[in-house]
Length: 227
Image 1 (tube, rainbow, N blue to C red):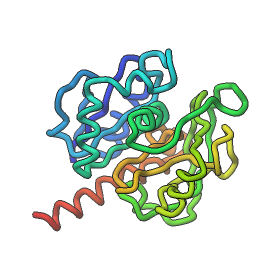
Image 2: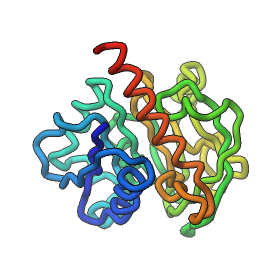
Image 3: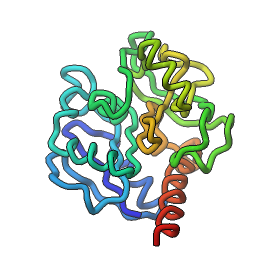
């Protein structure tokens, strides 16, 4: 499986994401600059964390208009797995690939620590290697991770089982303890915690690797069936 790690000016977790895929997962991966005109050669797309374009407006608001985002939307519409982590999640929200918005942390301060997540939905291509209700340890590092949506959107998220991860102890004020959601189709995941920083026990947890392994497993099963 071949992954694209999208690099925006200000990305600072692209190298972590590349390492997770190449060295820990053992799959093919390339950095793709924000002005790229095609993602057709890639099987999966990863939007890393950081401060794209310096977060000079809302987080992700400028990156949403980068040339490559037309291709990210195209990949999502084609059913390819698209994962946005931290700033990548914010970009997916701004691009309309996921519902809702991100606000400043309730504490109005930057948070960087390990958190415990509950797996709310293990029936996605990102979580098939996890158990429903399982607790996993993944670090967060953000100043604007306070997820919010209106009541109608929240009801849809619940009805469609789109809430994938929740915080065991809410670090940022996020609505309903939401830490990660998928689109209705189930192939676009946005999450604030950083699974790419939890791919080896030396980092404090290897739980994040299970998400990437789940993507590859689902992709390979689909391609064997379609072969």
